[in-house]
Amino acid sequence: MTGHVLAIDQGTTSTRAMVFDQAMRVKGVAQMEFAQHYPHPGWVEHEPEDLWATVTSTCRRAMTAAGIEAGEIASIGITNQRETTVVWDRRTGRAVAPAIVWQDRRTAATCQKLREAGHESLVSSRTGLLLDPYFSASKIAWILDNTDGARAAAEAGRLAFGTVDSFLLWRLTDGAVHATDATNASRTALYNIHEGRWDEALLDLFRVPASMLPEVRDCSADFGMSDPDLFGGAIAIRGIAGDQQAATVGQACFEPGMVKSTYGTGCFAVLNTGNAPVTSQNRLLTTIAYQFDGKPTYALEGAIFVAGAAVQWLRDGLHILEEAAQSGDLAAIADADQEVYMVPAFVGLGAPYWDAECRGAIFGLTRGTGRAELARAALEAVCFQTNDLIDAMHADWRAAGHDGAGAGAPVLRVDGGMVASDWTMQRLADVLDAPVDRPRMRETTVQGAAYLAGYGAGVYPKPEAFAEGWALERRFSPTMDEALRTRKVDGWRDAVSRTLTAG
Image (tube, rainbow, N blue to C red):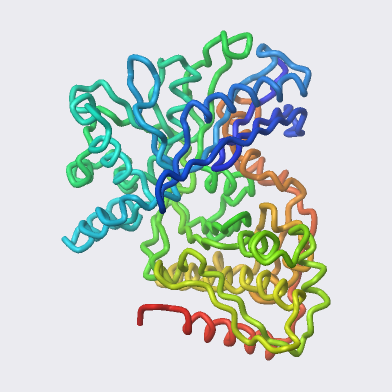
């Protein structure tokens, strides 16, 4: 055994597998996309067999690319799209219904009724989450109530529930292990993050039989052995974390106050709050960042619904870009005298506004406005939204009694596709008035999964030593004049105020 680690990154639109060596160098990569299904407005589904097929295929291809066999792999790590819900038959291992994806909104009315009945405080106080169809609990109930015979089968103990990691683990171990990790459990709206257990009151509220639930383990733990027929030999499975938490680990944000932000279609920012959960006054989520040795480390998380998606809209909707990478170059030549603001509320606004009904708008248009100004407005919107999110996090951090020495430390670690744009990262630093650190290893989500698995197998060092190996590719330091920054931020907030439907 040479100490290689096989990391699985099962995402919303594609599955990727990567092989890392003992020095955490990438030795093999494979990626496959799979179909998205939209059977009704607001519904988003995956075929669970597609998820499984892409996982096994990419793992085999990555192993081939790395030139290694199963006996040379110390462990497997899994990171996954969170909240997506799978219910399967324990006897066959096959799902009884399509997977309901985290983006799906079909249970909005159910959540609204529970909210009107006064149940959100119970959910929030025990899980750190909001009463929203985003999370798994209402999705489970929907499957049981809308699939023939499912509720009776579940109450008889014949069905199992899992987020995608748990479903993959069941399949990888040929049904021997039904488990998940604390980060994925914390996104179900059924897990008491303070007591570290499934919550009976929440199971009753959402009408979910306890027999369906997986065992909750640390992020680095013994998750069993893979079926030897899958990859030519049994491989230990030693790491699991949801994608944003895996990115937090990959960014080595192990100290309270450290913040990472991942930029893709949307944006997810996570602030490590240490061994104590912080209750948000700004409708941010309180969640588990990672868990080692039975001890959870908590975080505040905020979501921006539209980040890279705004650039995609300029490319695919307005056709003013040939490729997304053009946006930074165009923004750099935009007319500085034109103050154009884009509020990309295509599906409402997330934290800290949480207005699902508002819609996008562009302000400050003149006859001189062209595609360069629109590209700049789209990229600046990402920066302004991040600033709103970080401000809310710092306010919650201070309200919890911290002096700001941690969260106020002027560094944001970034990852995701958008961070390749130097212009965007410089503007982000200017808007935040804080340095932005771009790491050498940008695939931090899958790297986090690899680290958890390697740490669990004894291949990689303790978190403190892993953090020392985090490598900076470039730091972007703020250079914008304070008066200009203030005017721009004020202009953004005025634009947002004009789009909000509440208040």
